[in-house]
Image 1: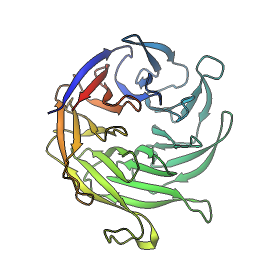
Image 2: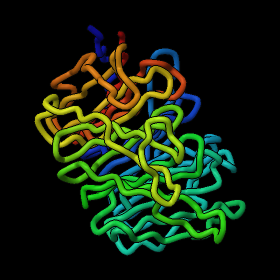
Image 3: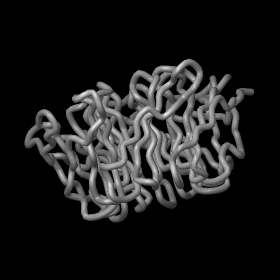
Image 4: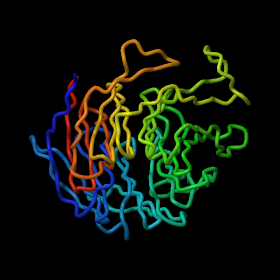
Length: 335
């Protein structure tokens, strides 16, 4: 059996903490919450502490933050309907661009692997794709409206310019740019969850996706490309995503976030029952019918809802979580 060992408990934000994000180097992270502030934390010796507080970018709750792949920029999505881009070009972090266009709360923000594209989504049911046009300049490349409800999360594919979104309409959608006319299109709709899809994350090579939902399950989806060996039909020569595994019975309430570790292959979930659970693919797992087992769990990881979990991209087995209880926790998972 694996173990989830608590290494650090950190406080600083007032009120609930919505999001945490590791810097690509894994030695710094950012956090955000209902106090409208972003905190940037770094490790000195064995102590994590706040090095910078960014409090002048947003007028309402900050829902999610994400570092650019180069680590030079930080994007923050807020309920004030804007997305702010922060950078340290002058030595101190400052807000260098504010992206406006969504009608109401921005729920999620994500950088593409190249760092050249940014995606945002909102309660206004839309997904926006922005092109980095130059220093501190962003141009809207697409406004996509295939979802029928609030869009909760956007996540880019780890190697390709493919975007996934998750919604209150119970579906996940995939988007890609059409090579012929340069228009962004919805290329797939993933339907199987019976309630809101809160979180999604790709595995290391982007051939599989994990999703978590208000229906208390996790689902594993696999990409079947045209000409696939399994013989799965691909109409219009578009990749088809099929649900190949459902993990049910482990969570007693809505699952708000899920993170698929690119280093170890472990999956972590953040749940409304205050718990964090870690899943591992079984050794006899089959590609078209994968099986996962619960490696370990901390049923009372936090005192209230766990809102986010993220694996450290550089330190295998290190996990960060944040909660409505106003704390951030750093964990070590041992197998």
